[in-house]
Length: 125
Image (cartoon, one colour):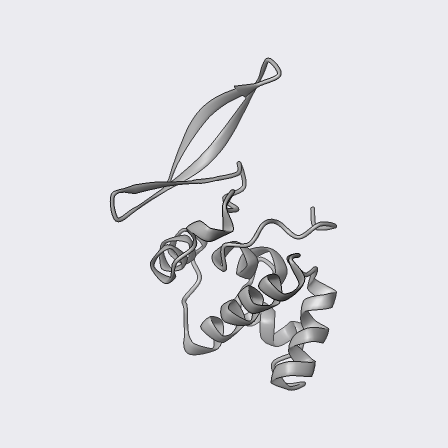
């Protein structure tokens, strides 16, 4: 992962780039992909390493859930919405904040969403 300076409206802003299979993939200054279609499982592994997250089978289940959710609703869910949606689809044991924070310690909506290649959820700071 590297940072490149770009200017827009006479301001300097850093953007993040990921190098994957000889291709440069651009993300915003927080590491969220600019183009959701650039995502791949290999890129998810690279982002997860940068985030210091182990991609267990349980983590992959949440990542795939998030990608399916995004493709269906065209929005990245906030933490509260994510917990409720996972509880409905995967069961109450997985649809709990404690379970999700255990997998994604910096926040399930933000960190798992970033690894899943989604834009930053609206309403998250």
